[in-house]
Image 1 (cartoon, rainbow, N blue to C red):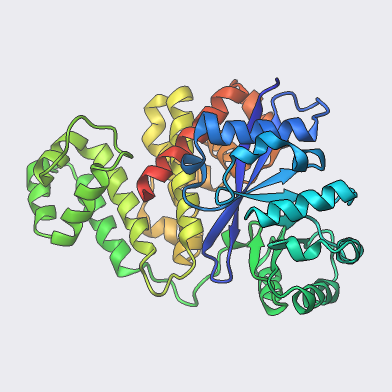
Image 2: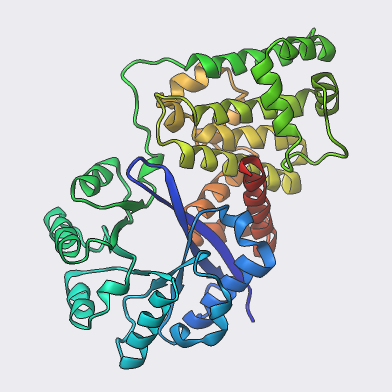
Length: 411
């Protein structure tokens, strides 16, 4: 069986908080005409058996495409209803057998979503009597372009099937997100949340600057590890956060670390800086002025670790800088500040700034590949993988490891 490469796309709620993921795939042979049923089976085998769904998506629900025949396949019954959302493709023929299968799956507790709902598709499913078995209806905002049609469709479904949650997919701008919220949609899929929503005045939050000051101290020529450990120990909150983080599976260690002094010595300057950056972003999740940033924070962590993983293969001497390229790429959207002012205030190394500004250097293509994989842009993934002299398996392993690392951070 040809190998399938997995990626996930976030689904957010009205508060822009992470709700779940859709699992998407691509075969290693992009020219292959890929059988949809085989692909779905391969996606599920990869996600549940080879990788572990928790390490890919955490505790969030996972949407997986199903073809007509797979609805009646008995071997799929081994997947518990709580683990998946069955996404029914729009070209499924509503035969009596299929309708019975949909009814039975609903009675067994499986959640189902109808993909690419249009007025015509809605009418067909309504007249066939199967809309009532759905949990979600997905409306493609690129396919249904007129705002009034998107609202009319939402109103019709909500009126007749109030238990069905509406998902607006391919929402790419904040204006489209606002429109979808106003039209009554419940969940949202697309990359609108990565668009910076800038505050009126430039101000880096005080809690973030506290971490930056510590990081700058590490960079000083006269830096002393034990003296720095004493400074952290005087901050009970920071001591607790740092010990908890480095005793998590995200940090590969032997034995438990019980003292800040030992932690600082074992980590060293470069790793210590990295973990302080990680803690700074985690604090964003509790900051009242920065609501709805959890998906962005996870994206920042993914990009940081994916860039680091790729750099470890290609330019190991630059892996710390690669980590920071990924990390800082989402900071303007998280802190809602302009990138140029933010970069200037943080005094980043030139190689990091250049990569973020799309200027060619040793890290630029690593960063581009990281973002392309996140956006499920398979053509760009293929081009960049070849350009960097990598293979699909290596890139997927880097992606998989990055997601496993994020899972351990939030476990």
